[in-house]
Amino acid sequence: MMAAAGSAAKGVAGILGGFAQRGAYKAQALGAQIERDMALLRGKQIGERSREDLQTALGNIDSIRSARGAALDSQTGQMIQRRTMKDAYRDEGVAVLSELTRAGAAEQARKGYRTGASWAVPLAVLNSAGDFAAAASYGKGK
Image (cartoon, rainbow, N blue to C red; front, side, top):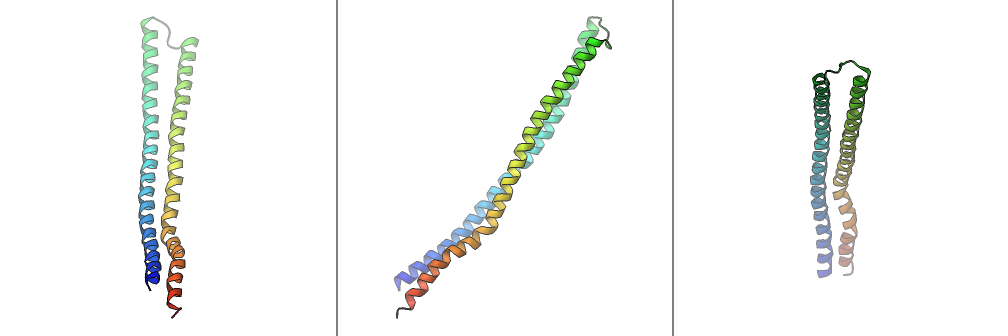
């Protein structure tokens, strides 16, 4: 009789563990969602900051050229501006892409955790079925 009670208790504990695992997966999914949202926000902030820095750099170039009396529309000046813009856009693209990649990875993790949460209890019930069967088999020996 004690063996039957032990097996039944083990089965119940397994199911309760499934509920605990589901809660843990849900918390991890929320953490991944927050990470995704923060990465998307960082990507937008990087883009804005990059454009502000570019405007500052172009303004500084124009100021220096004006102070030296150089024509603002000379071939050299236009090449410097194009190169500055090209470098700034490239750097912005790399930085934003990095954050978008991080956001994508966090989204995939979130989906995985949500799937784990949805299956935690059913799998715990299936895993506990053997314990309940063992508990039932002890009662058949009488």
